[in-house]
Amino acid sequence: MYVREAKNRDEVWLLDHIEAMGLDGTAFRSRDYVIAVDETTNERAGFGRIRIHVIDDGELCELTSIGTLPDWRRQGVSAHVAERLLTQATDNDFDTVYALTDTPEYLSQFGFEPVSTSDLPEKLKERLEEKRQHQSPDVISVAISPEEFVMPETLRERFKQAAKKREPEPEDTPEDFGIDPDDATYKYDTGR
Image (cartoon, rainbow, N blue to C red; front, side, top):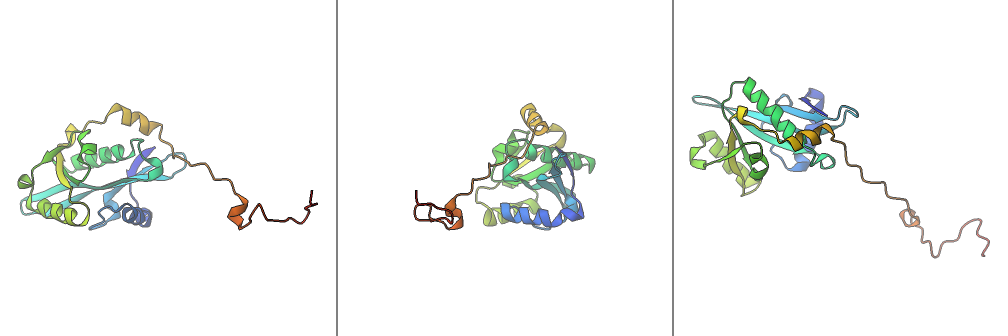
C-alpha cells in the first residue's frame, strides 16, 4: 500500500466517491488530491486533499475531503493520506493546517487540536458555516502544525498489511432464478 498524487485519469473515480461519501467537493481540482493505492492490485483505497485559500495577508491551508472506501476502512488508509497531505503542506511552507470536521476525535489522535471559531481566519469561518449548513451542524475546526503530526504505530502497521475486505460470494439458490424448489418439476424427474 502506498499514497501517490492523483492524476487526471483519477478525476471521475474521485468525483464518484466524493459524491457517494457526501464529502466536500467544492472547488474540485484532481491535482490537489492524493490517493492510497494497493501496490499488488493497483486498486484505489482512499483519498484526500489540501485546499489552499488565498487571504489578504497570504494563504492558509485546509485538510479536507478525506475518505476511505468501505472495504479498506480501519487499516490506516486515511491516516497515511493525512500524513502525505501534511508533508505537502510542509513542502509549501505552511506552519498551520486546519481541518473542518464532524469527527474531531479521529484527527486528535494525530495531534490536531480544536480551534475556537473566534480564532479562525475569516475565510475559514465562512467555510465552517457552509459545512455546518450542508454537511452537519456538529462540524468544528481543528488545527495542527505539520511537524507535530504523530502517526500511531498501530496504524502504520495496519497500513503495511492492508488488504481489501472481501465478502464471500453468496451461493446461488433456486429462488434467485425464480424457481420454487417445493413445486418445481424437472425434465428428468422420475417421480420417485
